[in-house]
Length: 488
Ligand code: NDP
Image 1 (cartoon, helix red, strand yellow):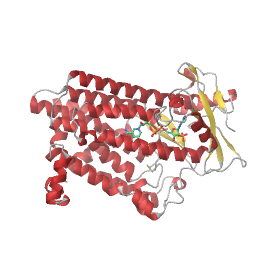
Image 2 (image 1 turned 120 degrees about the vertical axis):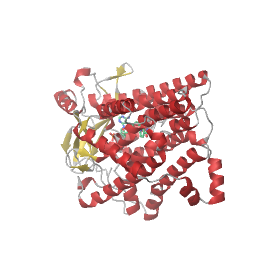
Image 3 (image 1 turned 180 degrees about the vertical axis):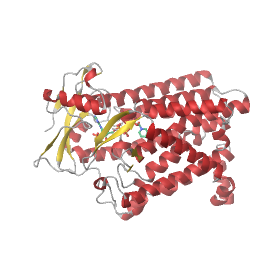
Image 4 (image 1 turned 180 degrees about the horizontal axis):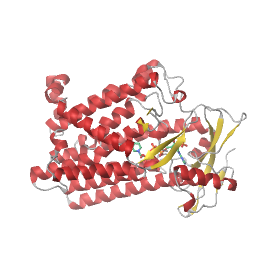
């Protein structure tokens, strides 16, 4: 039954998060049978509810289709190597890189200029991942719960990312002042670091693949496509863990790569300072926007448990190599480029793009907050000064239980179905524009985010449609636009 539901807001103190939310929701459950959220669901056995398959299976995927879909598994590392060579040896010009490849052949160029695998690089990456693993495992933090998995598991996570980020950056500053660490260590050793990060991505992906067969954490939450390549690429286990506490996916997604993101920017600032005596305004503004984005991620780490990466994507090469290698090498191209080729456009141009970035961030944060608040309050909250309007939805997990959920259709989620992506894209384009160059390499982050978010939108909508059926269709009827109202 599809219903448009508005509820009386609960006092903000009743929302809480994670386990607190679970308690608060059950305290207020008598107000409405439909109050439970996806992460704090009301469940009941039913045999009459229709069965929808969502999450685990990928029926109908041919072997060839799977292989093609898995091709980024070898194309992405080649792309990352090509970007490195273009930046470091061809003035950031793909045209010059392409000419060299035509003259000498791709492998010859790679052997001559490609990232080096050195013991120094390996030691740095092992120390880095080891430090992040220790902080992840032992720093105190609140416990929060994620969402029901297709098999009906509700996992808890310790949230301590913000303290890990702060400790890491304080250590970086202290070691730099003490003369133990060159603050420009990263750009000075970038070639060896890229080599070692690639290796780390492959090792973790292989480990995840073998673990899925030999010691799966939740065997009934695994996903097999029928193609070994595709399974390696997209992952088999949903939430692989080492023991009870060490969640490999949250660690990979939320630590080595994303904490390194801001360090790479700051290290490039230090490099610019060492090489030209001052830091360009362009690099300062890029670093500020990216710092806001990264800190936001850690402040809202518990919200991240309800995003696609943690709630739905399985853990394979896509996430493991992506977070260990692609993120730190590609999301930081703006800083890398400015470190190597310093320069700033006019102050008016820079300030304008900086403001566009802030607007993008505000949309991104506000849309993500609205969804989070609605889910945590069971819909009893105000969105843009009015009671939230939602479609009541339900879904079934493998254990046969039916859970209630809410699809918000007011505020940003009534403006378009993915306004959070629109805000993210504005921010991405502004950080690239701040570099002040028309070279393609500088725009790779924005181009990548456009492809990633369009593809993500498509596959998420397919998954939501499988999960919620007619209730999702009802939501799409009410909110027909995907990214920008009136355009798409
Ligand atoms: P969302 O946060 O939009 O999560 C999508 C999920 O939200 C859906 O699967 C569904 O999950 C639920 N949902 C969908 N519509 C509604 C609705 N109307 N009301 C309530 N819940 C709804 O997407 P992502 O997880 O992809 O992204 C989270 C943020 O992270 C975004 O802002 C994105 O821009 C950013 N991001 C950044 C990346 C980067 O590399 N920089 C990469 C990926 C994302 P359910 O099953 O719970 O119903």
